[in-house]
Amino acid sequence: MSSTSDIDSLIELMARLPGLGPRSARRAVLHLIRKRGQLLTPLAGAMQQVADTARECLNCGNVGTSDICDICDSEKRATGELCIVEDVADLWAMERSQVFRGRYHVLGGTLSALDAVGPEELRIPRLLDRVETEGITEVILALNATVDGMTTAHYIADQLGERVRITSLAQGVPIGGELDYLDDGTISAAMRARKAL
Amino acid sequence: MAPEKPLAVTSLTLSHFRSHKIARIRVDERPVAIFGANGAGKTNILEALSMLSPGRGLRRASASDMARRPDPIGWQLTADVLSGGAAHEIRTWSENGAARQVRIDDKQASQVALGQIVRVLWLIPSMDRLWIEGAEGRRRFLDRAVLSFVPGHAQIVLDYEKAMRERNRLLKDMVRDPHWYMALERQMAEAGALIHRNRRDTLLKLDAAQQDGTTRFPAAALDLTQSEGSMPESVKDLAEAIAESRFRDMAAGRTLVGPHRTDLHAVYAEKGIEAKDCSTGEQKALLVSLILANGRALSRQIGAPPILLLDEIAAHLDADRRAALYDEICALGTQAWMTGTGAELFDELGSRAQHLHVSETTGVSLQDPA
Image 1 (cartoon, rainbow over the protein chains, first blue to last red):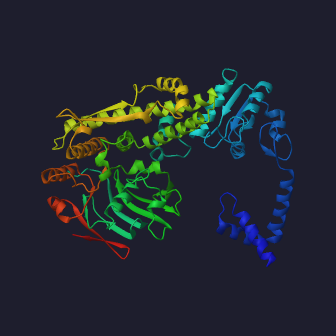
Image 2: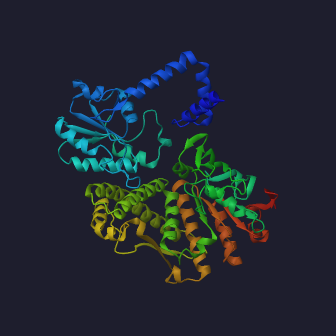
Image 3: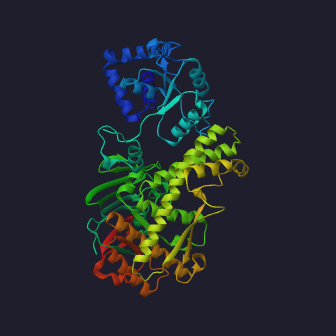
């Protein structure tokens, strides 16, 4: 009875993970139990290890296992470019592309009066400090093209003023995208950002 | 005259939607006359069709309200649509009152994407009081017309309203951070100026279509008015006007400047009488005139008129005007879905339309050709 209850608890916890529901959580747990040696035990160990060591970088908000993350710790990444992202998943996405070699600043969300998220709830004061102290020459706003994302971008740009070069990611036709499937706003943005071949 | 690339629904399936447990309708591109007793579910069919476009449909109901009682497990609508020379399958549904989902050609899609495929306009009995009630209804009517010409208008309006709600919260909370206000006001100005331009362009198109068409319905002279002052046209001017109004807005607890304060003003052109002062029949005729003008203008723009949903359309129209309306609908080549209680209301249409009888038997709606 007790063991069934433990398994139910595990299923319930797994079902709270993004992308999983009760059914997929049951399947995952059953799979883990069947692969106890290859999966369940190492997974439990890895999770305990991460639970013990994972923390937010005090400088940029990235997730790592030390107070200062590898990116902030690396002198090679001190290019003067600072990329602002909404959350760590965005940072990881940028890193996967290997196109940016500067440093990041993770805001931890976007401004939203309706959700009671103001500048103090984000890492905006810390961002302003970093621009002053780390020799930043360019701030790249890599925020989502939503109302909250754009509000946050305008807010930061307004706060930084003329102190530094401010850029944002281009908006337009995605690679492999077909014009016929794009909405008017995206086509309009792509037209405005057109470039010579 | 049939359009070259018609816009039409060729099949519609309602599952657990309003009064319909399951209802399957197969039609061609001709207009559709739906008749049946009160409560048979005629308007529910029109509401289902309205859900093929972005938004909350012709009743502006929540997804949970659309579920069939007493087993509100959710609902689903499936439709085959001809649009722009291509066939599309649209599926939209809601489970347990959750926000509705959309799939187009079996791919997840946004509601806004529906606007690219289905252009739909409607007239329902509650709109009979459109000219005498508050400005919000007239703005909604106008924005529905704009949406038929500019499908992206829906997203612009959503963005504007989202930014305004955020700003209104700052105003209510007496937040005084000018950078936060400026960030929101800039977005409101960008979206607001576009909304205003789209509305103006739409009025010009409707005006031109009213002048061109040979119609027995009265032309309406249309204009945009503001509840106070005038609407700044450019992004810069609108941003400045909203910023200047900040302290007054804080006292009011809401935004007092912008396209959300616009009203659609109409005058019965031939008589020079404001729409709100016209008779009930004349007010209805003005609405019909605008819907038909919208159809003609859109036909000119994209080669096909929109789908029209005309609920209880015979109300307030005498037999002559009714026959004239049917003639104009057929001439326009639009797939108009019309409802009425009696089959005789659609006699003048004859074989130019498809006639559907709707009845409800033990929770299942049946459609039989008349």
